Image 1 (cartoon, rainbow over the protein chains, first blue to last red):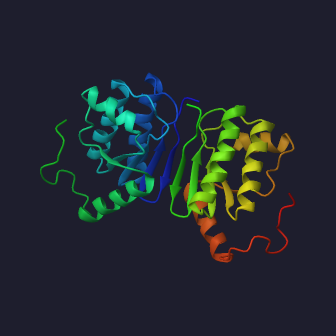
Image 2: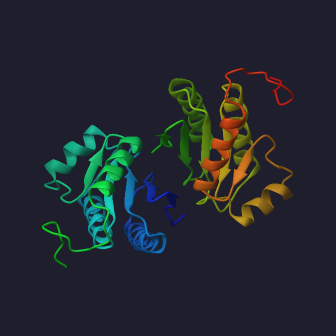
Length: 134
Length: 134
């Protein structure tokens, strides 16, 4: 299976990462997600990594990429379910996942996304200080 | 990774199957799910199989088992995202997934579960004709 399913849940998209993200799979996920955000007009992306126990700089970069791409398309990204060991590794690798929100589980992640949508209901892309330089 | 993550979404549990369900993984999933249903008091289980392109009788049996176990614990099971080829194979294998509800995607599956919960809000286990003989 060389595709990670993207589930639509109302205004959000949910991705559960269960397998090691090798090159092609990660690139597929990036492009699938961005297309899906655009097609479904999604306002948020939830990435569940509770099954991920080993993380490397590649995976950290992929998550950062997805967050930045979604942000340009006006969707916030929340990473949920991170295992403590993964958090330790990410910081030790020098990857603090800038621009990525995190939450303990999917429910809390959805609450976070909902509060973010309510805080900025507009469709204007480059609102103020948190625009991304591309 | 020898565990499939189970995500809690309000009164429902969501499982996305992305890898081949070999013996131990399937048994782990069964026991994890049943424990989670009991622990979280879940009223419904959503199993997303949109990434599954090949199905065999073992997998059909596992899904049937999960549905029956959940039913005893007063939770309905909905399988969502089945690929047409998988539906063809299941019928040709003589596995019509009795007792398992299906829906096109997660959103429709959630609607189905919500309507089922509203239709039978009680906690009574052996209500009428659809009790399972164990």
